Each structure stands twice: as C-alpha cells, then as structure tokens.
Amino acid sequence: MAFQQGLSGLGVSSKALDVTSNNIANASTVGYKGANAHFGDVYAAALNGGGASQIGIGVNLAAVQQQFNQGNITTTNNPLDLSINGAGFYRMDKAGATTYTRNGQFHLDKSGYIVNDQGMKLTGYIAQGGVITAATPAPLQIDSSAIPPVATGSNPTSSFKGIKANLSLDSRATTTGMLPWGTPAPVAGQPWTPDPKSYNWSTALTTFDSLGNPHNLTMYFRKAATAGDWEIYANVDGTDAALSPLSSNALNFDTSGKLTTVMPLNISIDLNGINAALGKPVNAAVAPLTFDIDLTGTGQYGQAFGTNRLEQDGYAPGNLVGLSVGADGVVQGRYSNGKSFAQGQVVLANFTNPNGLLSMGNNQWVETSDSGPPLVGAPQTSSLGTLTAASVEESNVDLTAELVNLITFQRNYQANAQSIKTQDQIMQTIVNLR
Image (cartoon, rainbow, N blue to C red):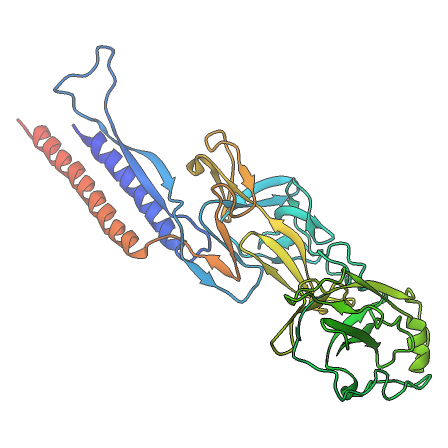
C-alpha cells in the first residue's frame, strides 16, 4: 500500500509551509533573504538497477535554498544606516568571531565603535590622520576628539602650501589720478586701511596661526607705470606695521597676458607686532607666521577683475559634528571648522557560493567549506557592490508570491492526505472480504 508516498508528501508539504511561513514572518526584516524549498523524488535502490516498471516511494526535502537577490532600498534618518546595492556582505566582529550580514542598521556604542543591534562591531580599514592606511580589516571606531589647528603653510596633507590664488587682472586699468600707496599714512600702533583710490582691486581671505587664531589677509593690486607690471601689497588684521611688504614683488605679464614672475612669493607676518598694534595680549603662537603665496595661472587680460581661485591650507581647531559614509565605504568625520577627515573605510565580503553559508539567526551567516573563503575588499572594487548611507535594504520576500505558495502547499497537503485516505479505504475493503 502507498501509505509511505502519502506520508512523505505530507512531511515535505508541511516543511514547505514552514519555509513559506518563515518568509512571511520576515517580510519586514531588514536584510533578510527569502528561501525556497526544493524537493527530490525517492526511489528504492537495487543492486541490479531499476527497470521500466520502477515506482517511486515518495518525496523528500532536497534543500532549502536562500535567494540572495537584491532587496528594495529604503531611506532612513540615521547616517550610519547602510545598504548594499550589489553583491557582498558586511563583515562583523564579536569577541574575535567573524560573521557576515546584509542588515545595515548600525549605530555607535559607548566606546565609539560602529555596531549592530546585537553589539557586533562593523569592520573595515582603519584611518590614521585622515588617511586610510590599514590593509587588514579591524573593528571601526570613531574618534570623537577635537582636531588641532594647522597654521597656514604647514598642512602636511595639502597639495599646496600657504595660499593658492588664480586671479584675472584687468589690462585696461590705469594708474592715472590714483593716490600714492600708503594714503592715508599708517599711524604707529593704530589699525590702517589704505584709501581705495590708491589701488585698483583687492581680495581677502582668512589665514590661521599655529594656535588656530584667524588673521584676515587682504591683498591689494595696483597697476604700475610700466606696461605689463602690477604692484602687490598686503594688510593683515587692519595693520601693515607687522607685515613684510610685498610691494617689491611686482607681478610681470608678457604681451599675451601670461604671468612671468617666478612663483611662489613669500610672506612673513609678525604676529606679536600685530597684537601690539591692536592692543591684544601676545600669545604663544609661532611667530613670525611665514608661508608662500602662489599666483600661478593669474592673467592680465581685457576683462573685468575677478577671482577664479583663492584658498589656503590652514584651519582652526574643530569638534566632530557629524558623520557620513560614501559609496566607497569611507566614513568621513565632519568638523565644526568645515573640515572633513576619513575615520575609516567599511569593507565588504563576497563568497563564491553564498548558499553554502550557515545561517546563525539575527541576519548573520558564517562561512563554511561549502561557501568557500570570503573575498574581502572595499565597496566598488572587484565584484563588490556600492554602499548607500542613511538607507537600508528591505527583505527580498515577495508577499504576493508567498501567499500563492501557501495556497499551493496547502492543496498539496490536502491531496496527500486524500491519498492516504484512499489507501485506507482500499485496505478496509480488503479487510472486509469474506
């Protein structure tokens, strides 16, 4: 009698319902990957093989395969929430044990580590001084300490030192009727600003000393009597008494309007003299403050005065005010002085056979011999996906399909139960034979 076939059908139908019910239960679980029940038919094995009249003896559950296709991306209000668009898993650490997940709901713990809801630490490449240096993944920890100031001309990570300026000087300007430079005459110990009629154009920016104190540097440009030449002067914090003059550093331009003066120019600011002139106490900042002014690219053409580029490499001290994560996984710390520095870089791991991973619950997997070793790297490299901050990846469960599966497996269960009932009726008929 075929009770065995019916019983096996009831068993796998029940397990298929379990798989479907688990999918439905996790339809709102971030990073969850739905699973499918795979079935296999069962035949009796014989030494002499099977024949054309071989009849199966039922069905078994061959495997439960998770589907690692992409889930929808939903935005959140947490800048440390991350979603992966593409292949890869986050690499998590807890007491030295490594697990992998697609759930990107992260936050900071009391020690500054980026962790998930179970306290597992997100791993990545460590940054030193704002530069990603480590090549071995380690738990990412956010340094919330303030960053010290950097004096103008002393930034070790800047592509230039001091001031970088690119200006457009008007070749049509004239010195006719202009007052002499130094009008009105500076008065010792008093702030001084030249008369606008003594120069053609000016531009200003803030520079910083070694303690992060700001100093306003204004550069004045005056058309010289010699064709193609310009004079350049400077004023710091409203006084020129403490500034090495730039008037001897004339800017020379050829007949094409290109700058021919060798760059950079050098400037030296007597900070103690400035404080004395303004009646401020002398501090411990390095004095004098010296740096270069590079005007490479500045031209003299028949167009209005303009500033194309004006920047300097110093900055004031700053406190950490926010975090952001780029598509490449770099965690940037944003500071109150407007600067941003890398705090680390999130790494991703991929596997040759993700279905070989062993599920540990809480959206965590561990590698096995079936999955193969992890292939670890930065996002957007090799086959690894891209990160999106302030978002999470939803479950990839299709609720409509799962509800249809419920109906299908329920019918399968009923049909197998009917098979057993039919066999029971046949057996009862046999028993009743006289």
